[in-house]
Length: 617
Image (cartoon, rainbow, N blue to C red; front, top):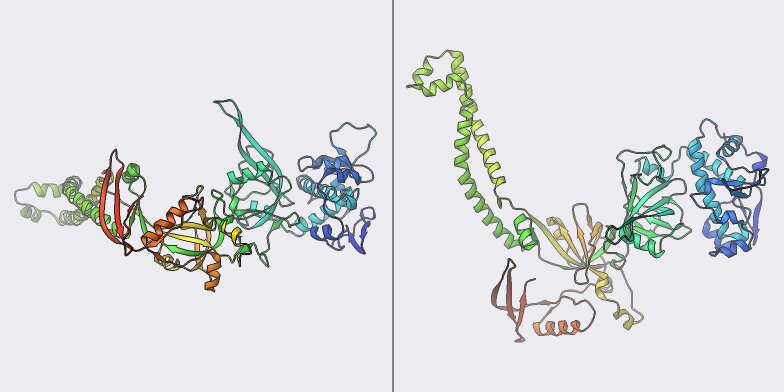
């Protein structure tokens, strides 16, 4: 059973305001940060407010790096950092030995207390208490960051983690008992900028940024992508910021590691273990957010345990994959095939083909390959026969060289006949197997005898969101329409996925990739085998689709499409696509020199009588 606290540690002082009481002792009324800021005191941002309210200077200097060096005076108030020059007769407490003895007096087992555990938790408790006292100086000045309060919180953590065997979020992840991709809220405790000197201009330049994240119990180093690094340089993310992370990846260790192991040290720059974060899977949280794993219940930012991206406008190019997003299929384009022949790619880049073109190329390739196989099979068979016959038994070879092999066979003993019969049964299969391997090796050595093509589907999508009626129509028109649209490419698409992406269908997609650059001002998304797709039920109404940006296909005549294109060229907006039906009058091909390939021109007209020329890209 839990022993009662000694009298000298019974911190009974209460904060009383507006008829509300808040206790610091365990068992008192628990108050959230939001309630505290609303009912007791609003949060202060500037340091001068804390100084005016009597917060000690040493409290303002507490950081996670120096918090374990903080020492308290005989009254339990922060006095100095260990190592500072003080009077010889000064008495202070706050060492690991002092914390251990105080915890033992509170009923903790001395055998279960480890110095590393005490030092680690003192680091985060002292930083938390100092931060609270700095932000709410009028109420907590001289009352929150005290030696007694540190002991109370250490005792609470001892009961939870050691006695109750309850592990916090980061410890479970480091032990490899929980996936690092689970949504959780972590706090930035330190930002380390590694710089390297350029050899050419001898100028100092930033190489990478390593961020230390904590769940309030333990710490883990994190590698952030280039987008998050820009946010850090701009000051959007700083020490004390709380981040909601999802789809994180734990790199640098295959087996689990405990944060209390001696090998675990974030202070060493060569420490290989890192938590990899990307911008599209990371969000800034309110300062009142609770650290640790995020509860799925009644959380609007989570869906199926993943961080929800509300709109394509929130997607950052090059910011990593999108955990989950709901999209509406505006247009579905014909299925294409990407030829993966190395010679084709090196000469003219990726070669995209329609379904009929791919079938035609595949048929020609099979005919050419069969000719090569027929040519190589005769030589391979002769070579295989020669090699296999050299492995035959001696009596069999003598029988073949005899004048009359049947007579020679009759004169053999039963054992020799059995040996020859067994060999002749094996000989045919051995020749066939060696011939097949020889043909395969010959085809592999020949260039242009292998062909692969990837099936892909491209769809034009928009965000699945109801913008509602626009109050200001002119302001709404100034927003570029393509900011809420994207081009999605689905690689190795199956027939079921093709049926899923019907125009006007709302689809939920998980783990979508995002390219680093836009194409023609359009956001580029891609889905591979790792991506998951499902149809949203129930499907949205026609009015909801219209408000989300979906427009049903409408075929315009060629003259109207040309006028719209000319009009859009004068503006900065993205030129939309137009669907047209015309009569094909002529097809001309222009050969481009120096290995540039060819360009096909199409001459079209329709009932308007307007003639237009189109060419492939």
